[in-house]
Structures are given as C-alpha cells and as structure tokens.
Image (cartoon, rainbow, N blue to C red; front, side):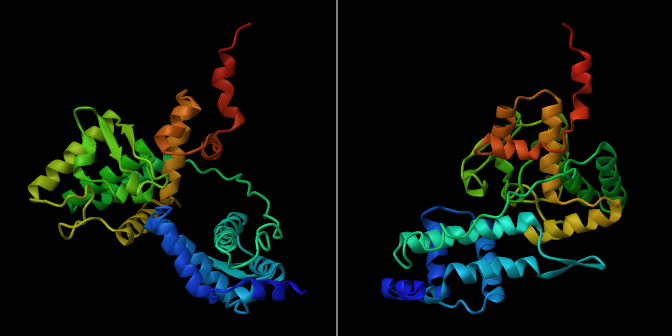
Length: 323
C-alpha cells in the first residue's frame, strides 16, 4: 500500500492540519505549561511551514518527501540582510524549524493522527549549528552603551535612571527578555540582596533566586526612588516613561534599536546574557553555579554560552602554574 494511503486509512479524526495544530498549541499551553513567547514561536514556525509548502493542508498530505521538500526550499530561500541578499536561512534557524516541527509531528503520531514513526524517524536532523562568533560584549562596547544612555537621558532624568536600571539588570543577572518584563517590584529583596525569578516567566518553568551585585542594588534604589517621585503604583518593576504601566515587549524592542543606533554597537538582548555568563566564568565561577543562576536545565546549554571564552583567556591561569 502506498505511504499516503496508509496515512489516509489510519486517520479517523479531524484531518485539517490547521485545526490539529491549534489543538497541539492548546495542549502545549495547558498541559506542558509553555510560555506565551514559546507558543508564539511554534505558531510562527508553523505559519512559515504552510507558506513554504502550501501543498500540505491536511495530515493526508504529510509524507517524508514533502517535509524534506520544506527544508530544501528553506535552503534556497532568499533573505535580505541590510543591503545584501543571501541564499538560505542560518543553520540555527534550520535547527529551530526542525525541532519545533518534529515536536508537532510527534504529537500527531502519539495521538493517532498519523502512523507512528511515519515522519519523525524518516527526516534526518540537520547538523547541529556551530558558533564561532563572539557573543559576549567587550568592555568598550558596554562603555559605549552606557554613554549612549547617559547622553540620551540628559533631558529626561527618569528615563536615564530607568534605562540604566534595565542595562544593569541585564549585565548583572543575565536574565531573559520575558523574565525582565515579568519582574515585579516585590521581586527585589534589598535585605537579602536577591532577585526572584518566577516560574511563570522563566523558560525552564522553574523559579530561581539570583544574588544581586552591589552596583545593581544601588541602581535599583535610585530608579525606585525616581518611580516613587512619579507616584507610580504599577506592580511591574520596569515601567513606561509615558504612563504608569508595565514596559512592553514592543517597548523593549524599541529600546534595543534606539541604543544600537546611538551607541554604534550592534547588540541584542541575548548578548547581555552571554556577557554575564562569560564574566562569571572568567571570575572562576564553577559551571554548575553559572548553570543554576542562568536557569538552564543542562550543562551543555551553559557551555554554549561560554563559547566567547578563547584559549588565550587561559593565559593568566597558565602563568600561575608551578610544578
């Protein structure tokens, strides 16, 4: 029997792929308790999958050939980077598409919409992407960003104090975007000198407590005093400069774009996370401590964050050796 015929005879429920994907997202949200940002990522991948292979509209259409065709088309897709045109998506993007799509196909298999191992075992995983670029920010780059915030805040004292607080949180805690936006005033404990990250905002879905550096505590006290002068009652720690409301994802994106332009440093939020991890490692922190403070579930993920540390960085330690 032809492979498609096997799939058709196996499916007895709703076969429209969009409906099934919506059910899958509901399962992810309420059973797996995935974060809204993660759900959004799955949706974006599926939408691009539909656009790239419009031939697939139902589970009847799913077969290794067409799924493989999706990845072949990704490899020839044109994308614009500034003024240049490149062919194919980045290896990391291909890896992301593979992981998210295979998770959905596994769900289809486990729930009886397609035969077991009809897709998951027949599509080879793309090579694991390698990263050779420097991810951690240099001292000079950090200084440029601080200078840009200082110059931009000359006419707006509250904005300066808030933006310095945002930068300090990113540099001294390495928290993720969603964790930053999810912080509440009550999550800062000045007595214990800690920052509480709630499980509902964490990618790992686990709460954790991060020790807070003295410089960050000082910046937070200055910022909260400025908030008090504005008579802010907002629960969120980081607020808008225009109204007493939480700082939004869109606002944070604008924050990054603005200081990219003003500082001349090409950075994104995740570079602060890499910077924090590398600085800890260079300060002789053990990798398990770094893993825990970053909220990683495995040492392998933490080691990826330390790729900015080169062999030359070991010189100071080697020079201290004596046999």
